[in-house]
Length: 370
Image 1 (spheres, one colour):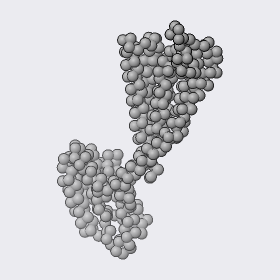
Image 2 (image 1 turned 135 degrees about the vertical axis):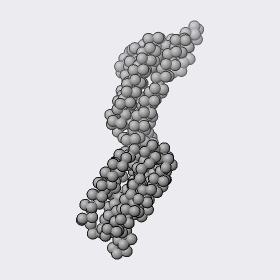
Image 3 (image 1 turned 90 degrees about the vertical axis):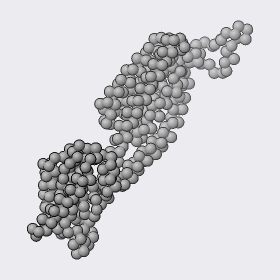
Image 4 (image 1 turned 30 degrees about the horizontal axis):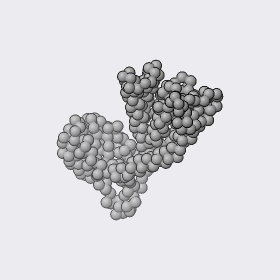
């Protein structure tokens, strides 16, 4: 049960993280639009074709991310596709406007912190290193000219200024960019980027452990540990936040027969067994819109949204059949009285009271038949 709950929690976190990653890409697209506008206004001085490539890439990659988030967000592959698209856009930006976008390399790793899977950070890091390589090499040959990559300057600016003319004087152009650029640009940036990995992994573990712990604490505060049904606190919360606004509500009240006799004659362990057996039979036969709450030692309330009488009677029949099967192989007598009522959510307390009263009438009838 614990592992299942943890997996559900992690799956929900990943869906949320996927949506947030898509939103980050949308923000990156907006920034590309702003840069495009500033370039058209001659505030930026980047060649038009380079900015157009950047903007189109932003739109295409964001649209792909939007489709992944919309249709595949709950799939395990979604995060891999999203980060591939993010890094594809970053690579394009690196190629087109090169040195202006060095810091953007950290964005995928920062986003990867959201995910529990440690291997995913290494997947992101590996793609980022490939992106840095493609960005550096593509930027050198096809992107915005970076004079430092072209001439491999290695000292302060004044050393390259002719004192007499004020003109810049450089040495010969980079003689072997396929060796020098990976060595002096790709490798150092990859090393710097790797410095983020251990801390991001730690942050991921902390975030995940806190989320799981919060889910466990929430579950403990809402659930009855013995029967795995919701407790009275959760019942009160649902009454106020959910059921009161429902148009159709069905309530079934269940009460274990003879709990006091079982406790007195056989012991409380057998009493707990009987209570758990009743809870189990109820849980086995709920509809998708039903919840069961343990109201007291041997009392359970099932609240069903969008219920009708035939639906409630069918649940009751199947639950009683389950109790009969358990009673045949049990050392203690397992049976329960029930009552139900229907109405609107506005009258939820009255419906519960009516179901309780009907249960009491049924209990008296069962006693009279013995």
